[in-house]
Image (cartoon, rainbow, N blue to C red; front, side, top):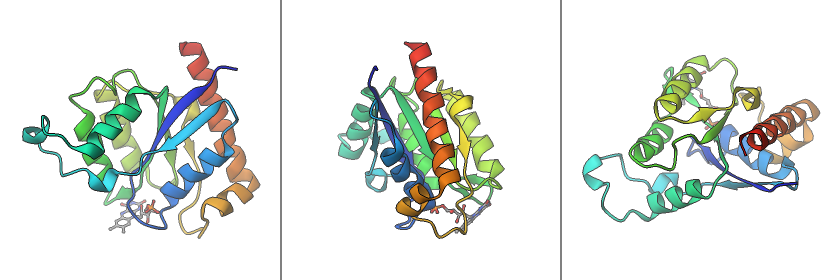
Length: 178
Ligand SMILES: Cc1cc2nc3c(=O)[nH]c(=O)nc-3n(C[C@H](O)[C@H](O)[C@H](O)COP(=O)(O)O)c2cc1C
């Protein structure tokens, strides 16, 4: 079985974020051939400013390096006022001018199925950045208001099955793309 390295980014900075918990759960649920690394320096990225693009920004360099070494990207991000979360959009803006994102297979995790605006907007942004959204691997799981943390998600059979299924689909698509 060919090994796949996947980078995961949560669009929430909240300590008890459902989106971050979903990514942590995915990393535990992933089969042996999938390694999921969660980017943890989003809060160290400055507000996007093209004037700073040539400056050494360690959190950005680490993100670019992680993306360069990744076979796919998983994004789980909340909706605020019908839009993409500011931290997530800021992170994507920093990646617009680089090569790392181009043709990157992307799986979207929506932890609040009612949040359709942000998901639609994320799709538009990712497509504009030449990312490759793997629709069969995109998944919506009802975490909003559930009080579930990472372990709670893993312990919920239906939610854990939906996450495993999405990862299986992603892995199949990545094998097709090889
Ligand atoms: C200021 C604010 C605005 C929000 N706006 C929306 C919204 O427009 N649509 C929606 O579905 N949820 C909205 N929410 C709910 C968040 O998306 C929800 O709390 C989500 O779980 C946050 O993500 P996290 O748990 O990963 O931090 C809003 C929450 C806050 C605090």
